[in-house]
Image (cartoon, rainbow, N blue to C red; front, side):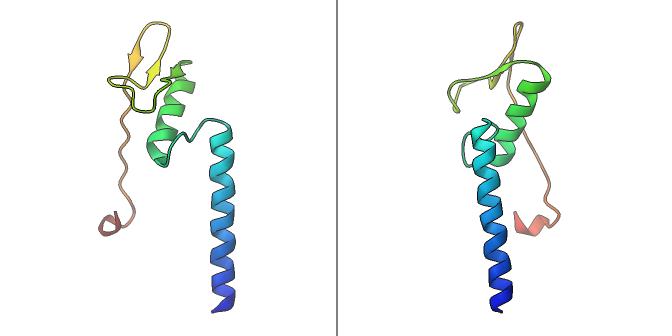
Length: 82
């Protein structure tokens, strides 16, 4: 049991380190990983910039010619565990 707890603690430590690294690169800007990553990815693809406010109304990414509202949806492997 102690070994399992140590492995879980190590995994959480690695996850926390990865989240901090993603925050440094402005990929994560809040506690919502999937939407944050989606907005960042769209900004990279369209060579746009993210809205200053994480709660910007109507758009998330601005390019030279348009404003884009990003929506993310995913289905977990175990739908009962949403």
